[in-house]
Length: 292
Image 1 (cartoon, rainbow, N blue to C red):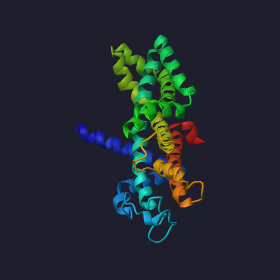
Image 2 (cartoon, helix red, strand yellow; image 1 turned 135 degrees about the vertical axis):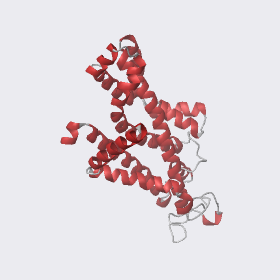
Image 3 (cartoon, helix red, strand yellow; image 1 turned 180 degrees about the vertical axis):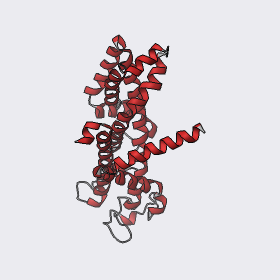
Image 4 (cartoon, rainbow, N blue to C red; image 1 turned 120 degrees about the vertical axis):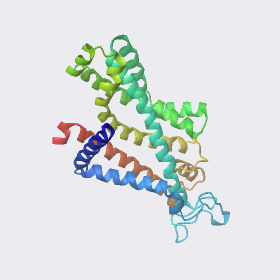
C-alpha cells in the first residue's frame, strides 16, 4: 500500500508540474527539439538511408541529391546517414558528462555549504580555480594527455564542468540549513550525513535540474569542439568529427556547404533546446520568475 501511495503522489506531482511546464511556450519548444533528436538517435538505423561507414571514392564530395540528401564526403560516405548517427554520440556525451558534473558539483556544494569553516574555504578556492580557468583549454590539454577515447572525453568534460553547480548548491545549502525543520532534525539526534542527504539534498535538487540542462548543452558543445580540434576520437561518428573532416579535407575552405552546415545546425539546435528547457525549469522552480 505504501508503494502504491508513493506512486500516486509522484504521479500527481508530475501532473501538476506538467500543467505548469506546458504553459511555458519556450520550454515546450525546447522539449520538442530534444525529443526530436532523441528519436533520431534511437531510430538512426531506420532513418538513415545508407550505411554511414560505406565508402565509394567515385562519389567524391557530391552535392545534395535525391540519392544523397546531404551530399557525400571526400570518401563518398553518405552525409545524411552520418549526421543522423551523429546524434547518438552528442546525446550520450551530453547526458553522461553532465551526470559526472552534477554528481561532483552537488557533493562539493552540499559539503561546503553545510560544514562551512575551513572545509568551505578549501572547497570554494578549488571551485574558484575551475571557474576562472578557461575550461576548453584545460579540456584540450587533459584530453590530449589521457587519450582520445570517448570515455576519457566524457570524464574530462564532466570533471571540468561542475564548479557552477557547486556554487549554486552551496548557496542553497547555506539557506536551507537554517530552516526550522533542519534544527528539529539536529535536536532529534540526526547525524550530519542523514541531514545532508535526507533533508537538504531533496530541497536543492529542483535547482540542480535546471542547471543540469544547461550543463548538458555545455557538454555537447565541448565534445564537438574537442573532436573538431582533433583531441577527441575522430573515428566515432559524431557531428564534431564531421566538422573535423570537413576542415581537414578542405571542404570548409572551398565552399562545400553541405559538408559542414547540417552538423553545425544540428549542434546549435540541440544546444538551444537544452538552453530553453534549462531556463524554463528555472522560471518554473523559482516562484518570483514564474510570476513575472
